[in-house]
Length: 472
Image (cartoon, rainbow, N blue to C red):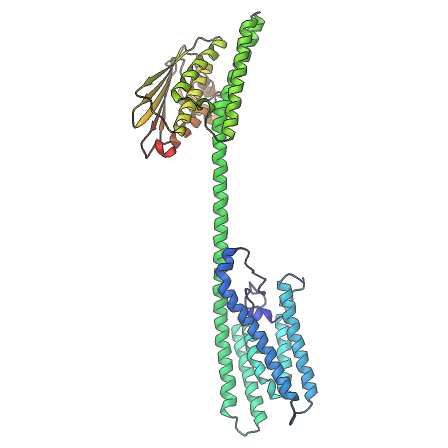
């Protein structure tokens, strides 16, 4: 039972069941984007709505004033004035209730009674028209209400009937045997103008709705894009942490376990001096891994590369691998060879090569049963290569790949543990992690091995602008 749906600022025509009905608060913009896109349409719709209400009130006041003005009066002027007040009250009640409902101030929904409200307003107007022709011009704002609250064909029919009633009232008031041309042309022109304006409003409303839907779609797309980017960032960070944990903490903990077992054996054989040296190595390994953990949590480079070069870091790694293997009772000789003129590498390249050497030498020490391991770092100007070779038992790379896919406990996993599986746990994650590191820098990783023939892990990283430098 509302006039507001007829010309609301953001809702629809207000027909029962029509989507988007309501006042300006029904679809109020929730962000600057929709506010900018719908500002012009909302402003026009708001002007039309306010103009409708003001026009109705002004014409009603004019009719009452003319009815009560000094001079010849019709029958029962005060009765018709009271009826005009009733019409004003019904019109105002419907408008206020709908506006308050659209603003969320009341739960009662007057839109369900829109047709009944329109019928009451129209019936009161017809009674006033029968009493005084001065209320004929109220038909023009009522035309808009019928256009927007009724289906189009029904609205055109009621407008035609109301126009005929206006012409008849003007003819009757003039007392002429034939209606004056102005009494016919004026109402017809007004009705035609109301129909055209009403159709223009519908087109404007649909345009505003299209803009609102486009803004909603754009906002939803932005939210989905932001969510996908966030998820991708989370997965990338998770992969980074997984690689760092595997290549540092997992390898360090494996070394600590090995040293602890060796220290326990030394104590069992009554050799506290050797046990003490192995405990000291355990402490140093734990301290190094603690520094690594703090470093990669902060997203920084390896502390083993702080204030030193990659060549020096690799040389220390080879020495530590030999000492750690000796503490476990194995005779592993590990050495570094450098070919070419050492050059300053981008930080991502240094970290990738160091991590590759750490993971590979840890597997040589723990699984390969090798006597010799050689790390060869070669500078070729446009690229850098690193080969990690061991003369251990080797393994079948196909079985190792199957072990990584199927998980620990398969026959392939046991074979992989006997060789260079790229991971201290035999899962194959270490090799996959290294391959991802290298491929992220546009490089390549190749694995050459066979049972009983040792293993070679070969890494190539380009240094041209399209390759390695891009990752700096």
